[in-house]
Length: 139
Image 1 (spheres, rainbow, N blue to C red):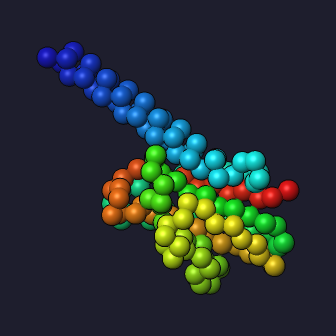
Image 2 (image 1 turned 90 degrees about the horizontal axis):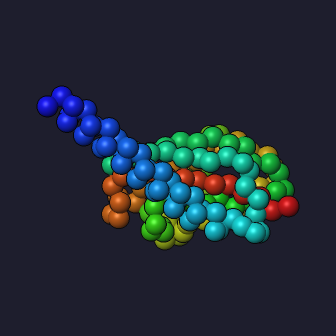
């Protein structure tokens, strides 16, 4: 009985790991298609595993006069990530929720600015999964 239980746990967690990697790969492909070839990634992957109404926060600096694109995805379906960008004083600068949960946004700041990016799942469509944000800039 103990061997069966141990074998079951090993197979269960191995399958869970493969499923997580597969979802992560698909999510990365969905984000990357909105960056290339026009934008170059900043080299960071802003990733979180969310469930229910959880919100993930990421912090970054956007530099003056650079043209940026932020992309958000989860799994195969588009428009299931809601992301919002706030300045240092917590003023909302942009939310894709106001734009039908668009998977990306292009923007430029005239001054360098530290921002907080919040990401959450569109609870009407998906209740848990990996959220991935990529930020790219034009050369």
